[in-house]
Image 1 (cartoon, rainbow, N blue to C red):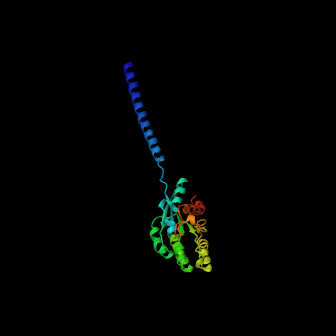
Image 2: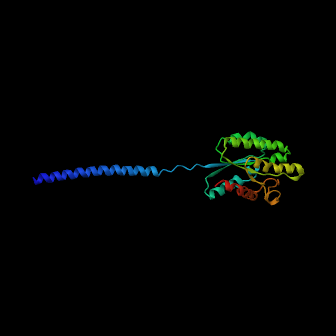
Image 3: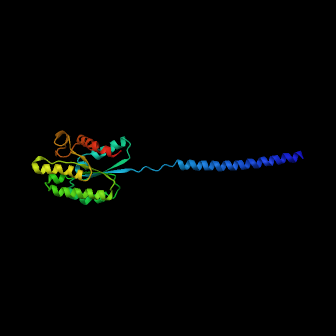
Length: 228
C-alpha cells in the first residue's frame, strides 16, 4: 500500500512539473515576442534641400566639394541633421531655362527649396519684368507640387554699368518676390564677396574656394532656422 501511494505521488509530481514547464515555455515565448516587437524602430526619413540656380550654385571653377551647397551639407552633417543637399546649379542658366528645367528636378521629394536665379538675366540686360515672371512661375510649380516645402530666395545684384534704374529694379525684384510668396530672403548671396578681387576667380564674377565659404555663411544665416 505504501509503495502504491509513493508511486501515485511521484506520478502526480511529474504531471505538475510537466504542466509547469509548458506554462513557462508559453510565457517565455510571449516575452520573447514582446521584446521583438518593441525593439523594432521605424527608419527615419531623409529630407531634401534643393539648391536651384546658376554657376554660382554649381561651383564653377571649383572642386564640387568646395561649392557652397557642399559646404552647407558639411555643416548639416556636423550637426547630425536629417537633411540631404541636392545641387541643382547649372552654369549659364537663365530664369527662362530654369523654368524649362525645374519640373525634372521636382520629380524627387523637396522639403526645402533655395532659388538662386536671375544673375545671368541681369548680365544680359533682360527685362526685369520678364525675369520676375519666370521666377514666379518656378516658385508656383514648387508650391503646387510640394505645398509644405519651405522656400528661400537668394537675392542678387547687377553692376551699376547696367544703368541705375535697371540695377535698382533688379535688386528690388528679389525682396518683392520673397514677400509675395512667403519666402525667407538671403538679401545678397555675394555679400562680402562680390567686387573683392582676392575672393573671386580671374573672371571677377565667380568666387574662389575662400569666397564660397563666405557664400555658405550667408546662406546658413537664413537656412539654419528652417531645419529645426
